[in-house]
Length: 325
Image (cartoon, rainbow, N blue to C red; front, side, top):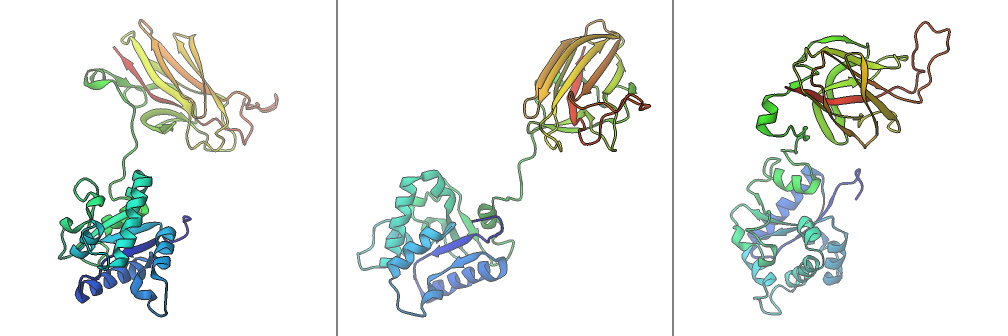
């Protein structure tokens, strides 16, 4: 199944009664006509003589997902409590599903979707599908809302996606005493293309970061910020790296720390390989954080400014730089 194709579903069920059979057909029709899923149901294939066992094998093999409709007869046949001649089709299909679960439990659990229609019970789900320890889908109405949970399992897009993880700040005690440089202290100076923003570095969102990203064709070769520490802080921590959404990910950032005008520390970080910074700043009055991209050639010497050539911009960040007293 490609991202452009509708997922293919096979609906397996028992013909408990004409009413149940009709309800299953309406459910399958809703999924195919209104939702647009590629649904296949035995009732739509009765236009000619078939080998139904071969047909079932084809449907089970071709389906991206198998929808199992709970009912008393289906459970009885799936659990091996029916006579050999009772619902041979259901017995054949459930035997294949049990085999699939035995072969690869995790993959089959995600692929086989037990559905409880209105008026039915979770107790009618076959035992091998573990109705009470795995997810089941109650469809009380043939509406978008009624099938929302089922569609989430099919598309992998639930209503409550996991948010991006922020930086672990070391617990309540550490969090309460930290000052974030991006927003917690005024900047004495900063280069034109440096700003306070959220930075995504190696899959982690750092909400209070110092980011260097050009917004025009030519940018300064160096991004920096300067702050007044007033000898009030003891420790500087941060994560430095290349931005995850960098236009040119294959770059290495140089990151430097200056205390009272003297270079104190330097780091190099490549795309997907951030570096944790933990520096003693005890007694320092002034702090300067720099970042640049090596290998980005400067403009000719006659240029009035030492600028990067267009096309090789630095896309770097100090992720959540913070100070502890």
